[in-house]
Image (tube, rainbow, N blue to C red; front, side, top):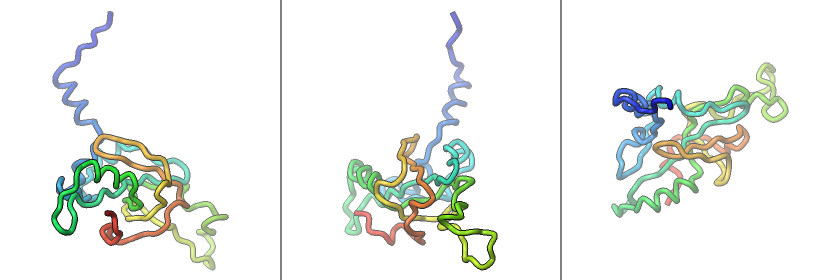
Length: 160
């Protein structure tokens, strides 16, 4: 029978390998996302979008209303599932390269440019993309043509 015991050091090393997005949320009560708080090791362990897909971190919104009323975690969770805003964590290698949809990037007469890039805040359809949970939150993988708009600040969009 094989030895399945794990040393304390191995267990601690495994704990550090868990992908957690929780640290990117600056204030737990307000649930404000600061993408700059995402470290490279967390991003490296996230799935890499293939083909024409984008990896999106949905915006959670604040944990309290403008009047100072704290929202229950269940309400915040429900709203985060229904959100239409997100932060672009990664772009697949073929995203925005379909000449039939987006034009020819090599043609100087066409005003070609990608609809969004990494580190952009975007708006997408409520039911767009595939959702999956990871430690600390949920991410989505969307097709490149499911992005509706690029925005400066997700707080400009009414969430609650």
